[in-house]
Structures are given as structure tokens and as C-alpha cells.
Amino acid sequence: MSANLAAHAAAGAVFDFYGTLAPGTSVDERDEARAAVAQTLGCDPVAFAAAIRASFGERARGRTGDPLATMRWLAARCGVEISADDAQRAYNTRLEVERAFMRPRPEAVEVLSTLNAAGLKIGVLSDCTHELPHCWLELPFAPFVDAAVFSVETGKRKPDPAMYAEVCARIGAEPSDCLYVGDGGSNELTGAKAAGFRAIQLRGPEFAGAHTYDAEAGWDGEIITDLREIYPAVGLAPPPPVSRGIPRVTRQPTPPRR
Image 1: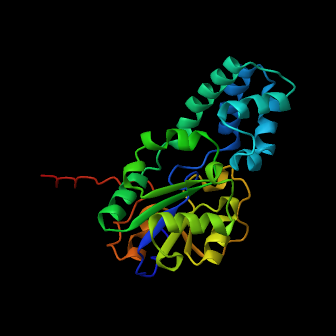
Image 2 (image 1 turned 30 degrees about the horizontal axis):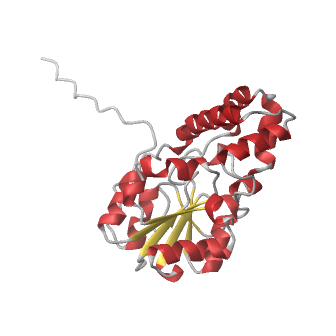
């Protein structure tokens, strides 16, 4: 774990979702999932993956319409015309594959539960497409989160100041009284710091190989490698050290010869 964070009288904590509460994923993992949707649509998988990547900003702001309209829009970008039934099947496939990317980071639910029990207001702020709000209430994070703000519903993306103001308004806390924790996608840390948060970057084990849109460049602020490292920053006892090396083998002493 990295160095202990300084204590901070925080009233709330706001978390990014992808790459933070849920672990980051590689380009190959994403493209494999996109290929399943492309097959349902009858699109070339390479062209579909390119269309997905190029259009994230539009889709994450909700500018391509509702989920089924978005499927039709993506298919059209690949030169394929689809029916309403095709769009529904494609969206069902996308929901199925995207759920795999919403699995919790190992310590995430524990951290949210601990902060919730300690009385902190908890927010989630995510640049995302329709799938995350669709699935949100079935995810294990949801019971511990006071408010979740999704870009596809607000029409804005981080680091737009309005996104940070919105999540603070919903949890009922000032930015200066809150931590913001994220992997750095969407230049979110710079945006959070400018909005008045104490911004902390999470660099989990998968950080170096994870695909991120608009990744934060040259972040020189606070960094953690495990979400539990924020406990001291909110006045909670630090977690026990986590061993990331090879466990030592304890050998029994050899009995003396007789």
C-alpha cells in the first residue's frame, strides 16, 4: 500500500465507477465484448469496435437517443440497417456483456459499507452509457450509495463542473467536505480538485493495462492502490497491511538427532 493519507474531517466521499469501484478492463476484454454485440447486429466487429470507441463522448452524454436508438445509430455507423427487434436483441446482448464489467473490486463493497456505517454521505459519479443506470439497483454497491449521477442522464461529462455540483447537491455535502476517488478517466481528478474536492487517484493492480477514455496525464496529487487506504483520510482506523508478495512458508524445526 502507498503512504498513509493525512486525516481529513470528511462528511462525504464520491467515487468514480469504472476503474474505481469496478476494476478497469483492457482493450482486448472490451473488444471481445463488443464483438458479441456486433455479431447480434450483423456488423463487422472491427468496424463496430471502432464506432464504439469513437462515439463514447456522444453516447455517454445521451446524444444518440435511448438504448434501442443507440443500437440503431451504431449499426448505421457500420453501414447496417436493423429493425426494432434487432435493436432489442443487440441491447440485451450488450447488457449481458456489460454486467461483467460492473463486478465489484474486491474491497469495494466493504469500503462503501464501512463509510456508510460511519455516517459519511456517499456518491457515485460516472461517465457511462445506458447500461450502468439500467443495472444500478441490482448491483451490490447500490444499498450503500446515497446518490448516483450518470452522465448519460445529465447530458454532461466529467470534468464539467456541473457534474460535481450535481452529486454534491444530491448527497447534501459541500465539495470541500468530501473526498473524490477515481482512476483518472475523463480528467476527473483535475475536475474534482478544481471543484473543491480532495482528489485521490486509485491505481489498482490492473491500472497499467486498463483502457481509459481521456486519461488523466501527469497526476501529481495523492495516490492509493487499494480503496481501504482512504480510511485514515476520513478518521477511521487504517486497514491491516495487505501482502502482495509470495507467502512465506513456515518450516517445522528439525528434531535433534539422538
